[in-house]
Length: 255
Image (cartoon, rainbow, N blue to C red):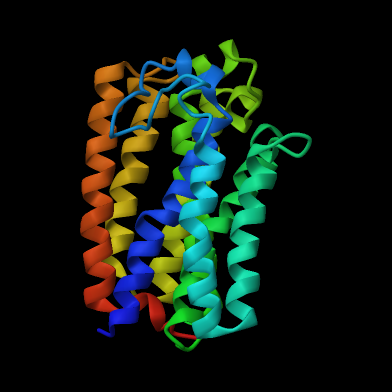
């Protein structure tokens, strides 16, 4: 792989992540302060407003050199793409927009995560990924965000934070998550002949149905259970990442 690939990978892993989650923490102090699952490396930081006061300027200092460098290498398309990433995070977090509290748009805006793939395409001068892949990644981003909302229903309600999960309730949100999982399984199985990932998601769907109808129903998860789920999801995500790179199937839809 070219050195530029590794520079881009580092940018996504730290500066871009710092933008996304730094602004998220900066604007969620009240909700995070009463959220028991926060305050660790698994689920994110829990700091006071004073401790986070330098976040915006730190993000600017860290991002600016990369934006200049990548724009110099890849031109105006890269500049527009990076500016879009910054703007979408501002719209998501800051008033008067604060889309993160405007259900169901706080789910829809998760499509922004897919733009990291577009960033890689532009930076490395690659062919655009298929629209079928973009659709799958978008649905996956929606599903991942909803999982977090389900775990945060109680602290979000206490902090008067509006989300789709607090609006429609735990069980209906799980139904929505199941619909997304079914859609993802269909896309993987029939559009990509990707049986391994589809199989993993099918197992997850079965677990979710057991969760909804038998195990938890309307009950919240305990902190230990959420940590267990978090570790499991991260390990599965890591394994699936290596599998996607190895198989390459998500770049080759069958129509």
